[in-house]
Image (cartoon, rainbow, N blue to C red; front, top):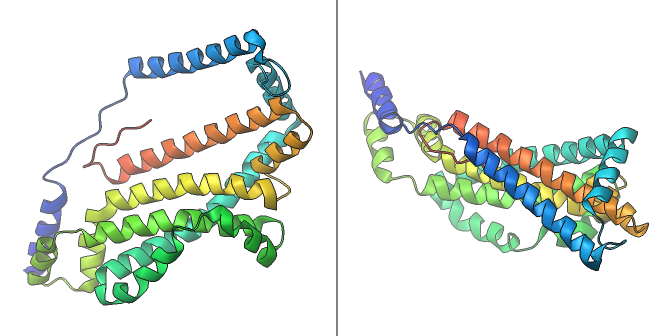
Length: 275
């Protein structure tokens, strides 16, 4: 009888206030495309007024660099290399950050002795760890994994810790009165209630991790999009540099869209606005 009441209580928390996201409108898509076309047009106009040259490539020069990189296959290799690095580092950050954040938020006595230690390291920029990462792991994939982990861990941990800690005690007390144990509380009450914030933390962590992996590749790798930019900078091929920056932004946008889709899929009771 208590199990039936507990299930009814859990369902009442989430499914009484469902808000299904609205479908994207075509006019919004067209408006975004027009903004992109206007930005490229302004870029082209600036090159016509004396900014054209090695330091300021034209959109046509960047397009040629993109086509050349695609035709030779080097661009896809760099994209796959960078994405594989962020996936490894982000996976470790997601697992450890969420487990630690949820655990410390639930077992508050542990948080008193642990959170201050984590907060002491959080303000240190991930880029500041690059010299030590190269010293510890040498040049290659492992320094990038480490830097991505550091960049993604803290927003993931903070979101998980804050989300679970802010769950109203009314729900916890009511579930306990219906016979819920610690496992049920965490799995069926705390995590579902905090899920939108957990996913937001993962989304932020993924974005920061993507910036971190490119930064790490600038100085501590011999492959990837960051290395591509650094190599072409030394050869003053700024059209390839800008092409690499464009690809970095495009891949990051795709990651953002993917996480937004995951949010709308796992939390249909919230309203997700994609970019």
